[in-house]
Length: 386
Image 1 (cartoon, one colour):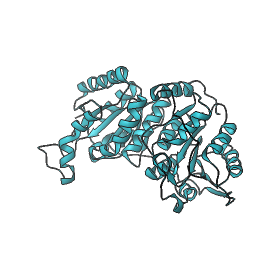
Image 2: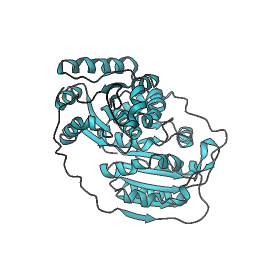
Image 3: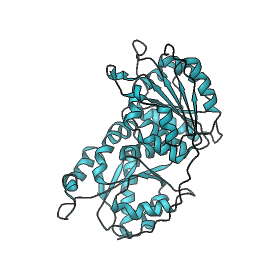
Image 4: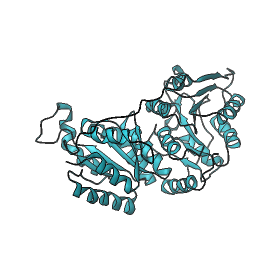
C-alpha cells in the first residue's frame, strides 16, 4: 500500500499534473488528495463521464500539460470512443488509472463480474498497454517509467490497473465550489430563413482575434472550416463525437491567456450534454462555445436529431455559463459573436442553421497527428490574451 501523495507527486515530477476523471471507491484516496491540493501546478476536473474525462485531459495535453485520467473499469466502455478515435489518430498520450472491480477470485457486485474478467484485454484491444498500479513506493518509478516510454515511443495512452487497497486512506478537504450568478440570456432570433453553416463560418473567421484557438467538432463543421481556411490554430476533430467541448475545456484551463473557441454541433452536444455542466462549473473565462444547430446528423445522411425541442442557450445558463445568445440568421450571429468575444466566459452562441453543406466538400489533407502538434505548438507560442 502506498500514500496517495507518493504517486501524485511522482507523476507531477514527470509532468503529469492535470487530472480528470469519474470516481470509484478504489480511487477515493487519489481523488481526495488531488482535489484537496489542486492549484499551484496541479489540477483536477471532475467529469460527467469517462469519455469526457479523456477529451478534457487530451485538451490539456494540447495546451502543454500532462494528462491523467482516472476511472472505474466499468466506465471503460464510455472511454473506448475517444481512446480509439481521438487519442489514436491524433497521437495524444495520457496516463490512465483504471480500477479493477470484479477482479476474478475476489467477491464483488454482480455488475462488475464481466468487466473484471476483460479489463486488461479491453485496454489491450484499444492499443492501451497496461501494468498493475504500484502497491509499494519502490514500484512507482518503474510504473511511471513504463508510461513515459510509451509516450516517447508512440505518443499514445498507457494504463495502470488498480486493485482494491492499493492506496492508503486520505481525507478530503476540497474547497467549496463557488456558485456563479445566473447568466444573461440574449434572444436575437429573426425567425426568417436560416443561414448555411459555411456562411456563419465565414463571418466567424472575420471576427476572431488572430491568436484565438479553434476546435471544430467532427463532421462537416471541421471540413468546412478547413475548406475556408487552414490555419495552425485550427484543430479539426475526427471521431470522438461529443468530445470537442471537453477538449476545448482542457485547452482553456491549460492556456487561460488564450481565447478558445469550440465549434460544436447539435448531435455532438446532445451526445455529451453533461460537458456543459462541467464547463459551467469550471468557469473558464476564455471559452466561447459556438453551437451550430441544423437539427440533423448532417454527415450521415441528414437523419433528424431532437434539437428542435432543446433550448441550448437556456441549458447553458442553467449549467453556469455567464451569457448565452440565441440566433437564427447571419446578422444576429455576427452581433452575438462580437458581444461574446467581449465578455468573460464561459459563453455560448446557439445558432440555428439550415441543413446541408457545400457540394464536393473535401476533408482536411493534414494528418490528425500533424494537426495536433502544430496546434500544440501554436498554443505554446504566445502568452498574450487574444
